[in-house]
Image (cartoon, rainbow, N blue to C red; front, top):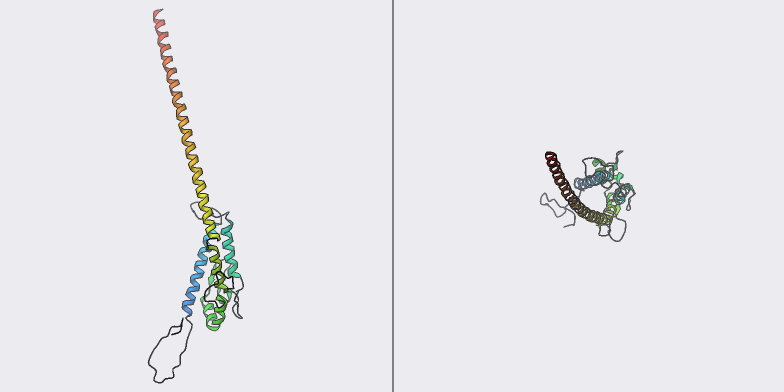
Length: 229
């Protein structure tokens, strides 16, 4: 009947006048925000480990230690979480206004009670701050999309064909190609060197065998002369 609105019909109305009341499904919205917080922390943990110090036995730790793009993604997302909403309202200006904030260890936390209180008392302000009233984020126009929308736009910029992530991926592929080529060249060089050494040792063995044969002949000759005398 109304897009985005679920109607629960409990009984038939005895008269034509029916009072309809609506309420916000805070549980579903809160679950979505918590899922976002968990995903954000998961990505941050990965980038922190990858751009940190190498750890023996951990293939991820330190793997992107010198990668500027990885640090850019991490810092950019954190800055976006701390920035004022591009669709701010009177009561909701930052993520912290709805119970989403970093703790002292830099981990994003979600206070569901604070979020539900904000949604219940200032639903329209929460919606405007999160989305700037846009049904979907403005991925191409650059218009303000609110706190959640702006992060979606940022992620889109990172992942698009000309974005940082595909550029990083192509860079890794190019490096792998160069390393593979150098390894092939090194293998060929070692094979050639091994062949040369094998030939040299074979020739040296032949010379030593000749020396041994000459030694035997000389020994036999000396022994024969000794018996004759």
